Length: 197
Ligand code: GTP
Ligand code: MG
Image: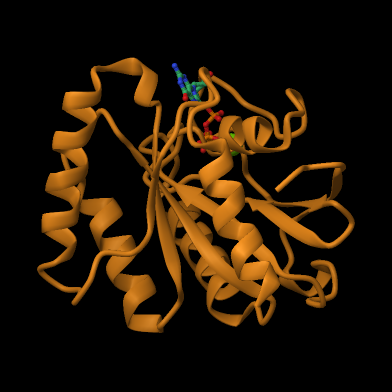
């Protein structure tokens, strides 16, 4: 897929104020600092489109970006950020989970996983929740430039194995690096295919 245009539409804390659910939508989610915003900028080819930061917790709103005037990328706040209060965490959980569960135009949840890490409980729990809700998701292993491809493959194999404890099959998955632009065609191709159906 060629990204001809990518435009910031709105940031929201209220589900009632999201754009009308009339265009296909792909939500990017994962632990705080996993590289969601960086991946969105890499996919769209627009460096400053989604705000990135070395400090976890940068993205705090539901951000809609319109691609080629006909589908949305949604940048979500990260989960598992230790330095926020318990009540804020619960608010986040409720807000994001309501959005994911109720959004009619949501086609697929792109769950970002840090490729450097062994399977993390919080990521597996989140995937299991998506499974329980029957929400389609794909895995995106980020920051692959940070270690050898052998290490990345080992962590992916462990994650797949852990998922198979609760799922019958492993969902589609991608290996990416926002730094090296790895995985761009694969992720965009995956989205293009869903949009066509
Ligand atoms: P929150 O919005 O805070 O949840 O974070 P996020 O998941 O949007 O992460 P963000 O894109 O802001 O990136 C976090 C940090 O990781 C930044 O310092 C990025 O430069 C760095 N980063 C993201 N992706 C990559 C990557 O593929 N390779 C490398 N080397 N660094 C990356
Ligand atoms: Mg972000």
